[in-house]
Structure formats: C-alpha cells, structure tokens
Amino acid sequence: MEHYFTNDENLKSDIRKIHYQKDDVSFCFLSDNGVFSKDKIDYGSSFLVDTFLKNKELNIHSLLDVGCGYGFMGIVLSKLLDIEVDMIDINKRALHLALRNIKENEVQGNAFSSNGYENITKKYDGIITNPPIRAGKDVVMSILINAKSHLNKDGELWFVMRKSHGVKSTIKNLEEFYKLEIVEKSKGFYVVRAKSR
Image 1: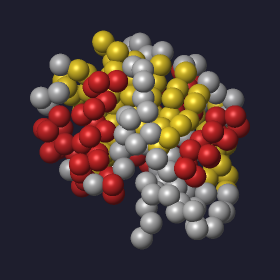
Image 2: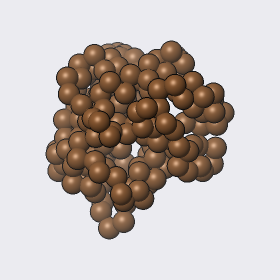
Image 3: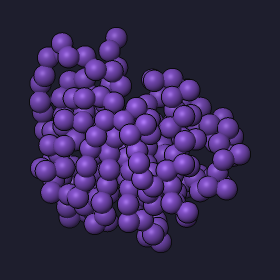
C-alpha cells in the first residue's frame, strides 16, 4: 500500500476542498489522493494547533512545520499568529497542495521538499510536527531528536502523538535531549512541548 510519505506519480488526482473555521477566521484547503488525511482535517493536527494557540506566552516569530502535508498546521498558525512559516515534506503532491494553500489562505509561508532536515539551513523559534508514524520509529525519532539542531536558543518543539503509538516511550527516549511537558491530552492524543536542555 502506498503511504502519504511516498511519491506515487501514477495515483490519479482527485482534488477536493476542506473547509475549516478557527474562531472567526475561515480557511480553505485543497487536498488530493495520496496525502495524509485527504478528506478531513486530522484530529491530532487540529488538537496540536488548538493547544499551541492557547499558550499565549509563546514568543514565536518563526515556525517550521515538519511533515506538513497540504499545509494545515503551518498555514493556520501563520495566519492566526501573524508569523512566517516554512513547511517541509517529502511528498511532492502534498507540497504542491501546500504551495497552493499558502496562496489560497494568503499567509506568509514557504513549502519545500526536505527529507527530515536535510534542506533546512536556518533556525526557528518553534518546530511543530504530527510525525509520520507509518514511516517507522526510526524516522519519527530522527525528526524529534534532530529538531534540537534547528531551534533558536529558547526555541521549542511541539508534537502530537497517540498513546497507542507509543507516546510515553517516545517521551522517555527524548528526555536526554529535552525538558518535556505533556501540555494536554484528548481522545488518546498527547500534545508534548520540548525545550532544549
């Protein structure tokens, strides 16, 4: 089975629109076959966005969305926080959609291809990710651990993961790299905030 982190050029395109409302701001996202959560906004991603937005004391002016898909998290946060966002993925179709969605929703953003952080040349105040669990534990841990090298001095990594996908053992494995806090839990999802040690 083809997954959302692979590129299948033979997969037939079937563009659809997903509408999303946050407070009094409306968003419209173009989605397609072959991308993560193609028919609706993923609950884990929206839970991470909601939790992030509740933390008003965050001093974040630059944001990186890792594994951005069609751009939901980065675009919503860019618009509502009025910050610049970079978004990366390895799925070409997802990136094409993310670039269209940046224009559609009129945000300050950029989406480009990067396998992990290989094409990242700068540091950010915040990195967010709903990591690609199906890509395997090694890929997920690499995304989470290596975020540290791309954060500014007081920067923070925020991620969302299900309890059933091993969030507790993941937190334990990250403790040597970060100070971690479980910010919120809902429906088996954990939003975790990590600051460099």
